[in-house]
Structure formats: structure tokens, C-alpha cells
Length: 163
Image (cartoon, rainbow, N blue to C red):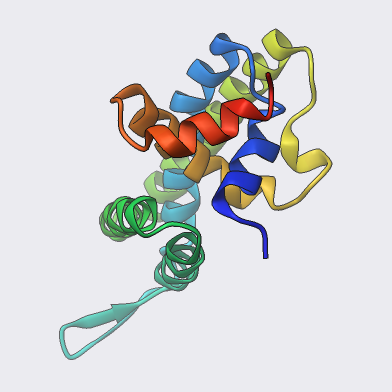
């Protein structure tokens, strides 16, 4: 299994331009939220608990991220839990509003992505490796963590592959 350094370095190879990273800091969260909104229907409630495709995806993704790195994995799990809760709220709206929010965020998020890759002059990572779709959200969270001065060893290990 690839390490977190491997995954993030592979993804970072497609994201060296700071403008591209900036567009991803906006676009990827929009896409994740959109997917969680769209996957929040159908929704099954029972005895104070609920189940939806959004919850199943968030749990599976959280386990994947936790296997790569405990700190970033827990951070991703919390963020995904928040998107599940938001998705439940939006899914309770009318079908028109639910779809408008889900599809609208999804489309605008991808516009940001493609603008970033225009700056980069390179295609998105997922075109060559479908895992890029799962690593993208982790990359964004890791970039913010790095900007805050945390996880320095991981950041250095990734950047060392490009020097």
C-alpha cells in the first residue's frame, strides 16, 4: 500500500503552481460538499440514527485516510462528518433546492479546478490515476495544515521529491 507521502507527492506533481493550489482550496471543498449533498438522498432514519449513501462514503473515506495518517485522518473524519450533517440538512429541502445546491456546487467546484489546471498547464491528477479523486480532499487539508506550520516532516518529505 502506498504511504501518505507517496499519495500526496503523486498528487502534488500535478499541483506545483500556487494559483492552482489556491483554486483547489476553494474547488475541492465545494465538490466534496456537493457530493455529500447529492448522496444524502435516500435517507433512512430509525431510532434516532440515520443512514445514507453520504454517510457510507464518509465512513469508508475516513477509514482510508486514517490508515494513511492518524492526525490527518481524524481531521478528515471530522470534516467529512460536518459535510454529512450539512448534506442531511440540504437533503431535507425541496427536491429543486436539494438538486440546485448539489449540482450548483459541483459544477462551480469543477470550474475552479479547471481554471487551476489552466494555470498549471497540466491535466488533473485523476486523469492518470483515479485515486486522485480520493486524494484531492486530503491534499487540500494537508496544504492548509502545512500552511499553518504543522506536519513539517511530511511536508519536507513531499517537497524533497521535487528538488
